[in-house]
Length: 97
Image (cartoon, rainbow, N blue to C red; front, side, top):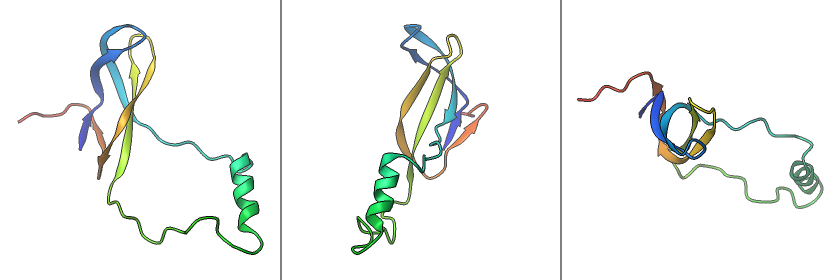
């Protein structure tokens, strides 16, 4: 799906509809020393093996894409709820038929 790079939508900080710059949200690098990661590593060792079943094949054919909208007026960032797409592409201008 082609997504326009600039969307006019509501900004809660400006309290009005303004232009927003669109980008696709990407998860940051996980911390290897976080409590959960250390605990999972500890549980995996010794008898018993994996804590939960290893996923052999995925059931879904698409992933949810979350959009990051940054207000051009005040710089406030909003996350737009994820939608299922095979491929998300940000385009300068979407042509209408």
